[in-house]
Image 1 (tube, helix red, strand yellow):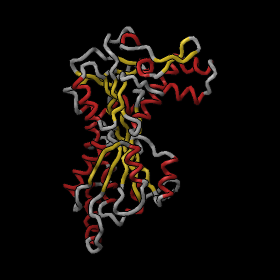
Image 2 (cartoon, helix red, strand yellow; image 1 turned 135 degrees about the horizontal axis):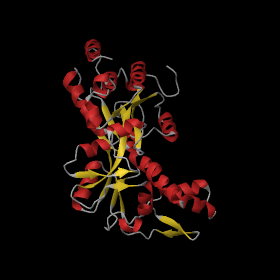
Image 3 (cartoon, helix red, strand yellow; image 1 turned 90 degrees about the vertical axis):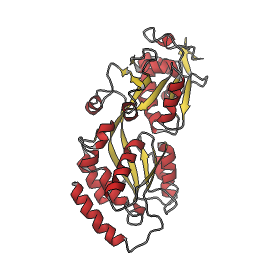
Image 4 (cartoon, helix red, strand yellow; image 1 turned 135 degrees about the vertical axis):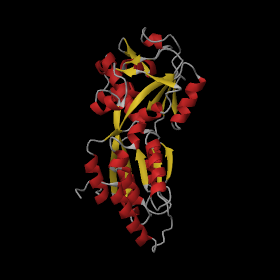
Length: 346
């Protein structure tokens, strides 16, 4: 997909659409704080290069964005939801109940979740999932019984870690990053320590044990951040012992303030994420409300532009901000051009 073709197509469509007044003339996007910097870059470039207004891009988290997306069809609802996780079946059902029946799922690439602290703070340089489970679990099994987490410092968790208070700032439950953190770090750490098996040996079902593995302590050692990553950064700025959970792109834009730790011996980078070597990575998405295409000016063009080789490809600007290009990008481009909806083959 060439930029030249996109531009020509846009000019042709703009000439036609100029005669059909729309109630709203700009694309509206909301959702994931992880996808936010990528979407903002695309929106700005789109506004500069196309004969459409710059799209309005808001954050709020994947769940909040998808909730707004599923409110219905019409000018008072958003056109696109950004998400750092796939849309859930329950959300698809909510969408359908409100008339949002044709949804186009667009995978834009991959991102890693990193564990960062003050650049001049304690030497948090290497973690295992077991460290984070042992630090943040609400309860841990002791002699066959679930007991409130007794660990107060990182050295309590692992003597190789700094002897400072546990102060973790993690994404709140409305963020897609939280789901990945729970499954790929807390649950994995629970399994690695043998805690999950101990829970099941004590009589818990597998589902209940998984839930207990991912339950986070509420005594102040772990703090949910419901805002975007700038709020997490502010918490770390004010707490020298703080550790934050971020998307790779945000960390790479703040390397003057933050240092990052390895996970399972692997340093997070676009290369280690692309290879699958880094263990805490995930695909990123946005979702298009097909009913708004052709009604909201520039919606189709914005989506095409976002996934073009020039933008989302390995040499595009998004890769400079930590996005790992999708090796199946050409298939995604075709899906967007054809507005292939979820559950359909065309």
